[in-house]
Image (cartoon, rainbow, N blue to C red):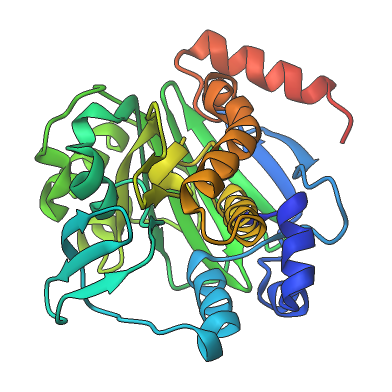
Length: 326
């Protein structure tokens, strides 16, 4: 996950930027491997400022939690089951903990937000699959090239090897049906979808000599449909949405950086209008929608770059990359 642009400045204000740099992946380049095995690149990964970092998701979550630990109560292993809002607060029921009342509820719980479902309705009304899927898994061995992210392509498929501080991780991005139903939610079906897509080709990836065995036996497999989240409003009374829960374009949308920027925008709005959370939420949404609008529109270009749909698209992408400055 990237922390860059304005999010890097926020990390500096929080005092966590040195820790983010320590945990960074340290992989500055991106190299494409053509179906014939030729390499194109490397390209410097686009982080406009020297302090911008790429960091594993778990490390970013840990650092952010630790930064808030002294002033925040955390309830791990629980989930919201009901929200009842009125003019002065929100009654919240949990799966395990006793019910509590809060002044404000902010759903920052991702693409498949439980808070959004409770307050705004089923995700089918707001989450729109884009016909692409992503899966990741750790490989437990060093990357052959520790200095670059290496991406292999076939039409409609990409297989990426990412060096993460000495250990390789694999990423699968592939095109598929836009509306697969609930089938892809089960781990066994997820593995079957990956193998169905990738077993059609031979992948000369040294870190992944047994693709079928590695995918079948993976205990830490992440899988999801790449989707866009769109809502007409991010607040219902004293319940609001933040980050991917409000405006996701998963994988292509700078979700981690935009979530940090949105949190700062919301905090500033609340601090500027004490006693009037409705006004604060309107100001937050008005300002932050401008930040996410470009990412909401730009996913098609990113998909064409990372997962060209045809051999013609692959050739055009590789030619364009060869012409770019390194």
